[in-house]
Length: 331
Length: 261
Image 1 (spheres, rainbow over the protein chains, first blue to last red):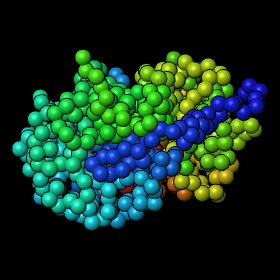
Image 2: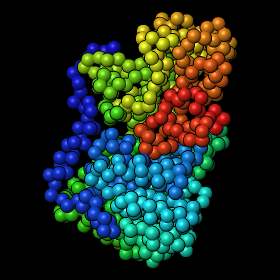
Image 3: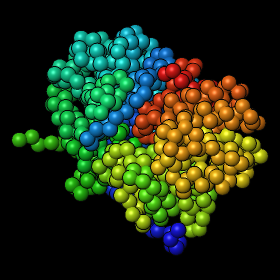
Image 4: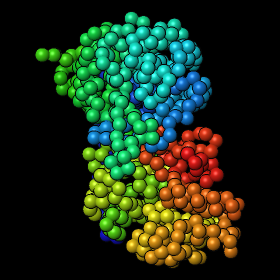
């Protein structure tokens, strides 16, 4: 063993820097609150569904009240065990996953998870997937009664056979699910769109016409990785959903297209790991942004994004972060 | 409770072409956060790797000014290659303690069964004076039975049996054969603690069940967040449930695992 040294200034450095940036953020005069279909988020950064569980794990690293909102792990009417492993593969600047909506079911969420989340001053957005439009309706009713702040209707999960992506790629079915959700929900309904379509505007319009209060995009892009030695796909389900920095430009483009075509607030997501990424999505038209995959490298990523977004806003001489929304000046 | 810790590499020993013994200064992860062998650290391996790499902890030590933890790992891809190129004094961003480790009682008597790179997570259990132990260690070939690892068992365990797949050292064959031979003469064990590839663990679990001895197995699966949020490192249980290696494991009771999944 080499001789012992005094503790490094860097020891615990990242935690310390999170605290430092927090102080900066609080000093800043920028108004960070945003409005997402009537739901006021104290800042525009939301944890992305499927990467954050029900908050308990990352709640060990930071106070969940620091976030604008939490999109919970996707719920189904009944518990699901999900797909066989391997469920993850690393790809260039991205990851593929095929979890397959493993979750305890909507009733268990309401009973065991929601009370935990309610201890925090953070907007709780329940994410739901159904096999039929009726299931979406039933879940909306239960979750509204239980007091979630918003419902994110997932019509775009690439990893399940029934429902999921099928609803998200056909305008008529997407509209039907949206109508059913709206008619059973007493809280705002946000519909999560799939990027795995030829024309996302067509789906966005159908969902908007059916009464959605907001849109979230993008879900993951379908992808595949093969082990060249064994000739086997890494994922047991062969294909999965791509997320991470690799998808950011696709997300920015799609948010821009949808924002230009539909007058609904947008929760933008896809590969956000820095403040600049979040600012791009907001300039493209998003009112708020979700951070997901970046958490796996850095549990503090959402706070880092929030603080950097505040400083970008301040540097540009804006009073409020919401002034970034839709600010892109296309050529 | 896991924390993010910036660690310093304090020693780096190459055991063979692709195996490394790395010692980290880990702040107060051992004293304050209870880090112990058989748990893992989730290590950020440079900026090019999006995902952290879960590395099992071989042994831990309280120390001043910082505790230390030993990680013994094989280079399996870009992330672990990056890790193997670290030098003394380099900093590493880790999350930990993560995972559960083996469930052991003071005064117990344990049969430790390790295979290949599954041997290092048993070192701390093999060294502890708080219980007694017999070890059965299996390797592909003699060159993989690193003396610096094997000697730690030989110095502390009542008996240490070695086996190799190719017969170049110790008994020719797999650990479950050696384990059966041990148990036929002496089956007074509190539990069997096993770590290694899944096919080996399955065989160990079968022999343990045959002799009616509780068995704990440390499992591996491709991991994402490492903290229990993303649900990718699923491993199937007999009752049909999926548990997660990072949060519910890596150590499971052998009888709850679905070995045919």
